Length: 248
Image (cartoon, rainbow, N blue to C red; front, side, top):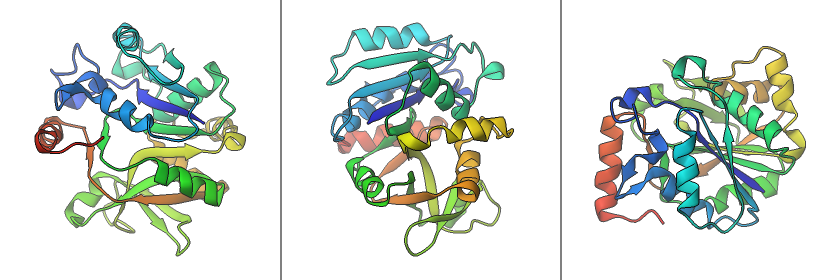
């Protein structure tokens, strides 16, 4: 299994913090965000390579980061060639680009580079092994007022995704998609088909919606604490949380 950390965005909602620093490199709890994610990946069974997709503007920052760390497996940095927010490939575009550039044929776990969480990724791997289908990681939200800010997943009683709504006015459930995915290696070619059919290359939720209609995808519900670092408030909340808690 390979793990891909998505780090090619420009974090415009966090300007000026991200004007000269990529969002995954912003410090939370005294360490860059990406370090916390890597620590979680280190506990995942069967990983044999870490992939990190970056934009061209900040690629050298990740080269320096990779050179300053030691890892349990090979690390491959993929430069997607974009130089500003206006010419970015989008999340699905970057996944597709990385799969082709790195010749990925294995199962692929995809993690957003601005996610902080305190639960084990091995639980999602177990669900993946059980159902043998693509997986989207979800978390149940108690606060209904926040649901319209995220992609919302609805499932049947077996956990199969039957609906996905991107930032809906009327959420179909209380299950929030978290920017965590596990794609089966033998179904990575579906990315080609999706994009060839004109699929939106930006939001991952559009691809999940397409998978619901054209293939099969299951949800894995995590339990624990999760921070989606999209703005200064969420960054401060995560930093405050880490003052008194460990997510490793």
